[in-house]
Amino acid sequence: MQQIMITSGDAGQRLDKFLRRYLPQASGSLLYKMLRKKNITLNARKADGSEILQAGDAVALFFAEETFARFRDTGNASAGGRNLAAAGRAAYRRYGALPVLYEDGHVLLVSKPVGILSQKASAGDLSLNEWLIGYLLSQGEISEKTLQTFRPSVCNRLDRNTSGIVICGKSLYGSQQMSRVLKERSMHKYYLLYVEGRMQEAGRAEGFLYKDRAANQVEILCEKQPGSEKIITAYRPVRTGRSETLVEVELITGKSHQIRAHMASMGFPIVGDSKYGSRVQSEQRRRQYGITHQLLHAWRVVFPQFSGELACLSGREFRAPLPQSFQKLGAGRVSDE
Image 1 (cartoon, rainbow, N blue to C red):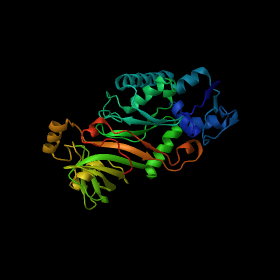
Image 2: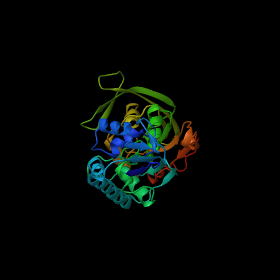
Image 3: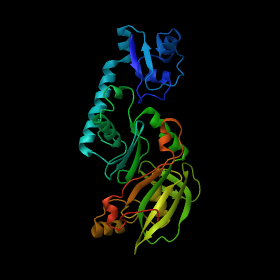
């Protein structure tokens, strides 16, 4: 008999889904048969697979050792855990101790600097996903064995050259809840950015975004076209300079490159953004201030109401300090002005 103790990382999922991941070589029909015959039990009781696992639950498998090894395919599972752990440790060595803005048993908020991918773009990349694994390994919160059944990961993505708050799920429950509120748009996300030109009034821009995936570039359309998606961007000027404006944007919808393309379509390209703005202006900013990327920062999030284990996050707001690049244009400390 083998016994598996459910950790917080695996809690929150159905028993049958956990079993399929833990015993990848066993068919679904066989697992249900084993549940019916009580060859698999939950907390020493018969289960049907629909039960939601909680931390501390005990799953018992009454299999012969050779059967367990065949269903588990322990060689591949162990190798997968080792590979994830190795990549995580490498990312943690490379990027170091990034600023953690909040952390509990389920959720972590980290301030991502410019230059780090949120997720891998190719097999050899080391992204914030790998950094998260390396960080949790360094804290002793997960192990190679943990990674055989659950992989902590980021829940929202920022472009490589966009800085600011990234929300991470440390447990399955945390990942599920963060993904839910992001999908429902009940979490409010705000960005600070510098745009070229003097913006005088706040507003709410709507349009349709079409993405050219081959070129990794989007276009803002006035009318819906095949393949386009509705976007809404709320904005307000915070501080106006001689030739640029510090702007706060709230993403009502969240699509790839939405802020960059939407601001440019309104005549206010983001400072340093040569993809959607003027290459000439971007080069001038580089020579004058040393700005080499778009000045776009995911600076604050406001959580909705939660019940249960995440109730402590209800209504709370978190902010990421502005990076040094913003200081070059005089942003300094930004309040709710």
